[in-house]
Length: 274
Image (cartoon, rainbow, N blue to C red; front, side):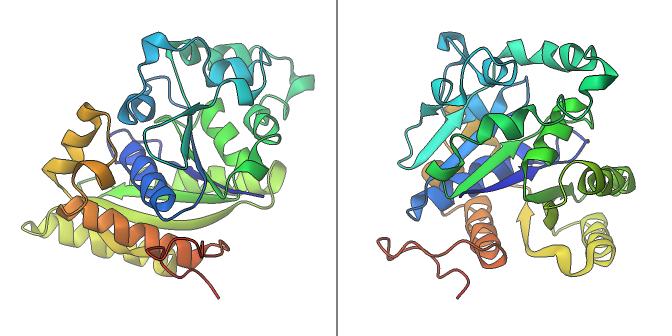
């Protein structure tokens, strides 16, 4: 059964979508079967994989409200082995719809995604959920469905603000909804080695998260910003850029942290855990 990893931070602009797309694309390139679930109504993960949202007849919203199974939502991408459960603006109203459910339904409204994923998890080795920039019901659905969490932290002022609230939310989800959930790691993003501030923030993140902080640091990189406008993940758009090399290293580091056996048919695949 595939491992589901939610990429979460209630702050916007910290690199959640870039992290999801880059990790998913590199891991799929190495022969794994990967699904990206776009749980943000902005749909940046959807457009970032070259899917035209206006042409979609169904999206993740339809699966979460029970209008159709997730298998009817998932679309293929240009990357072999990489599929997408896309988002459209329809998702914007889902939080309000879920919030209107009676208290009797509490729990059910936080587990819609987990239930939707059940029929497809065996089809994938790894599933990445791109969460919205909030700690609302959609993010709770991502956490309730996942076995692991990755937290991108930008190396900017106030980077650690709100992280305590996020970690408290993760703890509550572990206690009440999903005892399997664990933090896979925190990743420093938007790093600028020329500034003292970036170095200070990186040091604070490593002190805050300890061994949970990934060794890889993702730099501020023009190519990472350009890739989504071409509908391509960084491994296709500019794999040898500083951003591409960083996310490849992060993908290798992630495979070493999770229980995902190497794909022997792909000689370029990093050797995972023994």
